[in-house]
Image 1 (cartoon, helix red, strand yellow):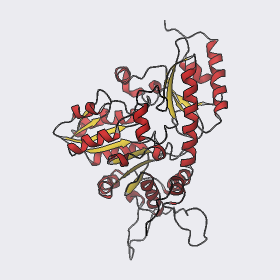
Image 2 (cartoon, helix red, strand yellow; image 1 turned 135 degrees about the vertical axis):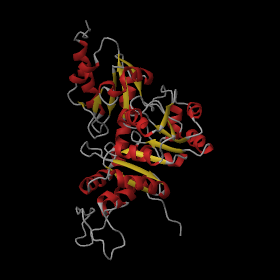
Image 3 (cartoon, helix red, strand yellow; image 1 turned 180 degrees about the horizontal axis):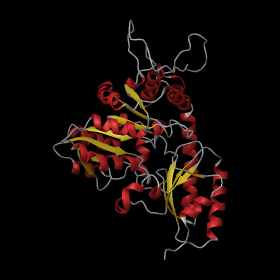
Image 4 (cartoon, one colour; image 1 turned 60 degrees about the horizontal axis):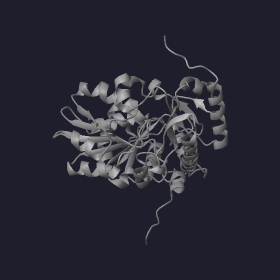
Amino acid sequence: MHKKKKGLNTICTHTGELEDKQYKGAVSPLYMSTSYAFEDVEVKRYPRYFNTPNQEGLSKKIAALEHTEAALIFGSGMAAISTALMAFLRAGDHVVLQRTLYGGTYNLVNEEFDKFGIEYSFTEGMKPADFETEIKANTKVIYIETPSNPLLTITDLDAVAKIAAKYSIVTMIDNTFASPVNQNPIDFGIDIVIHSATKYMGGHSDICAGAVASTQENMERIFNLAKNFGGSLSDYTVWLLERSIKTMGIRVKAQNEHAQKIAEYFYRHKDIATVYYPGLPSHLDHELAKSQMSGFGGMLSFELNEGFDAPQFQKALRLIKPSMSLAGVESTVLSPAQTSHYLLGEEELKKQGIKDGLIRFSVGIEETDDLIADIEQALDEVRSKPVAVDD
């Protein structure tokens, strides 16, 4: 008999949940133990082995959401990224990375890979040819991020996957900005999907976690390194993350809708110089985004016109919070050049097109009319103040 595939919200709510056999509770029980029996058991469980009941249950949920065979939960997004990369790279190997990346990923590669004898190249552009140009005989991995942080550029998943297959190279993607709600890279031939689960999976700005999903074979390789690196997540946080993912589909779809409205409002606004959002027809990669995303996401970036001070504008906001992270139910803004991408330095920021005045906007679930009213009052306040000029 043909088994019908479960819908997104059903997977978010039920896949991987643990049964409360004793009390029949409606939610997964929490197993807090860090010590389990080793005699007369099928599995020797230990938190650092990623195999406690709650860890295993949540891994099944994330694998189902990303259309993969298996997944692992990590203590942070960077723990997930670093473990996945290092599982497939060793001294003498080479990795190709797209130029526009999360600042933490760029720092990991730029500051650490030389120590391990791992070669790396950043693409000049985002087109498929830019990736193929950088491939060498010792290239083992191509690493991408789409939509990218913070300029929301879009990378062609299908094209990159085909190039990698041509050269027998493993592909990895940071899928954080899209979330599994809006994009499933595995369906386009990408091998390994990585998330900062702190963001849309957590969704409430109170969890720090990471996730990796792929085939069983690839995940075994990642696990063999992960158990030595020790980047596992506590079961209490695992339980909280499972709870949060239950509403991810509903939250992200609302954030998609609100971000689209805010982006259109910015596009028409006389005081906004530029807006970056793949859901706008004016976005250079709009058609590509339509072909590989089911929703355009809750993230956008924008620049104010000359004469407006970006830091002053952010301080003038009353409802929208200037805050370091993203993807919570509350709307937040930050300046990437001063926060997430600060360590890149002026030269690399310029190469990536990240200006001092760029503001990244994580759109929450508030009513868009209230968000727009807050933006308008902040613009009014900043408009009345002179811009600070350096001596």
